Image (cartoon, rainbow, N blue to C red; front, side, top):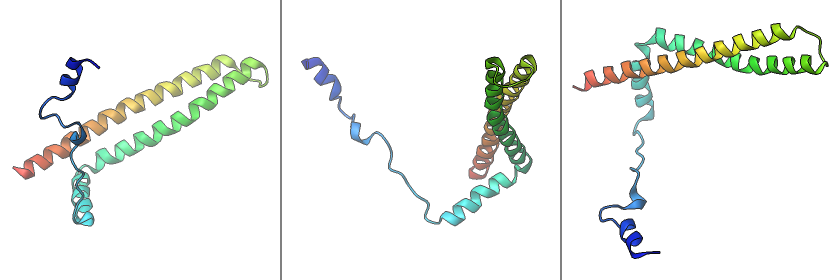
Length: 124
């Protein structure tokens, strides 16, 4: 190894073994969970909406591959059915899955922003 690369690796103040902070744990886990749950309790509608979206997206994500399998069976001739209808339904389910993923990301970002904002207000 060249002398320059050795010098670059040994930069003063750069302790590569201590890159991450030590993990801290709560002294009273029960009280901590209650406090965090209180923040989520103020956002009941958003939490329930997000739960519904997650369940709907999961159902779409499970159902879409079975439609794909059915379309392949129709193409192969081992099953009887309307290929255009099956592909159309499959595309619709994948579209609904994508929309649910988008909404899930939006709701989770909005929820976390509201909770962090409330924590900051209480802190200051």
